[in-house]
Length: 306
Image 1 (tube, rainbow, N blue to C red):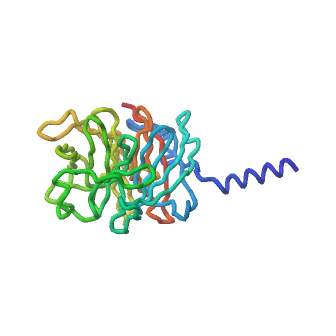
Image 2: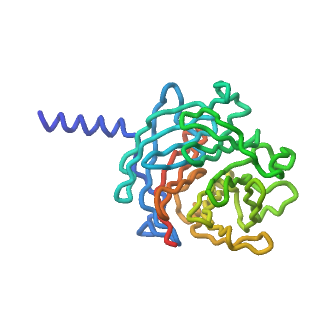
Image 3: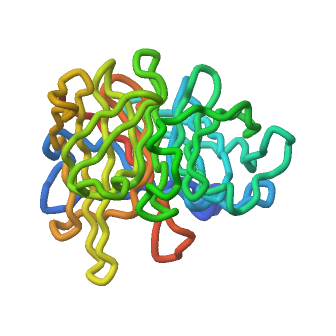
């Protein structure tokens, strides 16, 4: 009788599982290390509605003190507690979900809520937006504090290639302030190059693909997540590039590829869009399921060997 009870308990636990083991690397590799990247753990996330809010379309992450925040491009801020002991995603508990609100405490209207980038700035969160291209500072319960001044080149909506190729990513440091970038270079720019913008400075670097996320590795180096997708051929390429803001000549900064994952080589990739640092040289990366049953929300814990 006891064994039957234990079996039923196990089945129930599996059915209610919210994080499921998943491998993105090719089995032919035989191990998780690749280029300068060591994949420590990967989970597929499946959460039910929280307070009537769907768990879907996660675009970016921000981490601090065992708390993980995720932004949805539907204007929703999710909050989790996470256990990363022994280089594993041991648990992930969804604690809250808030719809983004303006300074008058009104939920953002559809045309204003395409939130894409997320980063801590002190005790609060910076959020970057597409379509209505801007960066705003929010509390941890998704209430707007103020708007952030951005570079003058980013203020003109006509400069963007399309309204849906806006401020995809944001990051902050005390040394450089708020840094952001469009998903693809502005009009009349060479699209084999990208540019990072603070309020008054620019840093150009060579890269191929759409920028999806930014994160500081250390005081001067930024990790850039890029994604290319050919829908007709179901082909994806996800790249991680290191850009050194301190090593720039004539505004062109040193950059190098630290990982390049290609689905044609057997990588089981999805629409990776978010990135956050969790400890020295260790990061979390997340994919946006586009509210499509054929796609997954994947959370990857990895270490850079740099």
